[in-house]
Image 1 (spheres, rainbow, N blue to C red):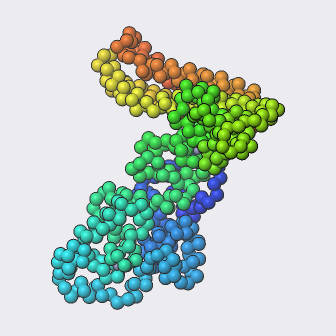
Image 2: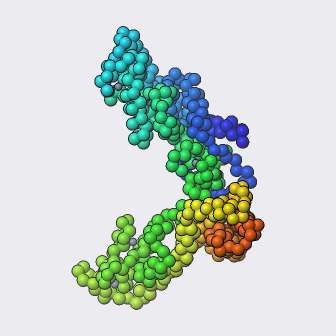
Image 3: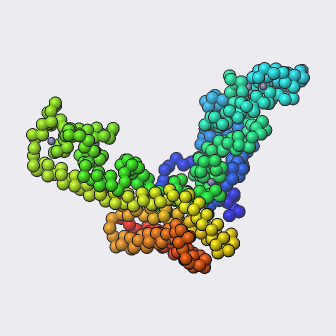
Length: 499
Ligand SMILES: [Zn+2]
Ligand SMILES: [Zn+2]
Ligand SMILES: [Zn+2]
Ligand SMILES: [Zn+2]
Ligand SMILES: [Zn+2]
Ligand SMILES: [Zn+2]
């Protein structure tokens, strides 16, 4: 692990221009590291210093340029050696400090000449040594600078480069100066997050922890769809950045998300699913589900892209039905049969989808109660300490069991996506056995954890061994299921079907 810094040197920075889809691998040792914002800053600084040793510019200016070139040092150096540095700065709407440095240092003389200067922001006479300004000679008092920078950092999204407080001046203020002028740790952290953001995002071996306000990033040796866990407890898939979606690959998850978004699934539950099956039809053109919401048989597809107008009865184009009144006289039995059977094919697909989708949603719902369960288990742990005279350490198994329960539920949830996209094969039967076993194991553990302690007559030893045994069993079942799917990925057992 100590070698990580060397392995991920700046020379490894590659652009994530191609959207390759890393397949989940069974690699036994997936090496990753969680970096603090300071460590990220150090990595970034090394990259900036490499340029600085060749071109005398401020760190903030180099950082801004590197962002412009998506952190491709080679490209930036080529442009800088090409000649016109000032033209390059003009292109990104800024002024290079070198060009200003050449001009007269009027600020210095002003500072030497007077002991007090009027700050043109707050209009207060201020001691000269409390004034601050860049090489451009726009001097303001430190309080005004602090306020100006804080507003910039806290309110604006993209502060790659903060320019001089003078409204017409495009000179960049350097990182060191910004951090010196700001005392508030929160603002400092935000600035560090914003300035390192493009560095992390253009590096395919780095990824931010998605938890809001968490300032850590994951650093890997090779980009893979592998779960990574932050110091804050957040677990994501490094490949796509979504929540850990074992055992399915990033691509499958994407397909599923697109499909369920298209079906407006958030407001559909099991009951409405049945209603949909009897009260809706699919648009004959684009297969969007259309609901009949009145007596009129003139249907218009609700997909904005399609808007196909058709007849509810015969599913033919409405244009063949006359203009003003419903007039379904173009009845053609064969045609109708044709369309109807294609509908029932679609219906079957929808029913199949609903089957997996309702189970997926069920687990998602249960996972939403995760926090409630955590707090109820916490109070149970206190009860147990009182009732059985157990120590705090002795009841920790409960908390760990909740973690196991949640991770198993999450895996179980995604097995329904896996099943939905897979054709029936011999190996699918084994998968379904594994799925059933895990399902049962999860329900048992869930019951143990939700059970009211007052109703339990067991002694403490019994509860402890029950929960421990059950959560170990869950973990084993989860591992067996994932391993089986991974093995299938390698041996190409699975017949993925995206319709
Ligand atoms: Zn001021
Ligand atoms: Zn200025
Ligand atoms: Zn985190
Ligand atoms: Zn992923
Ligand atoms: Zn349509
Ligand atoms: Zn018709």
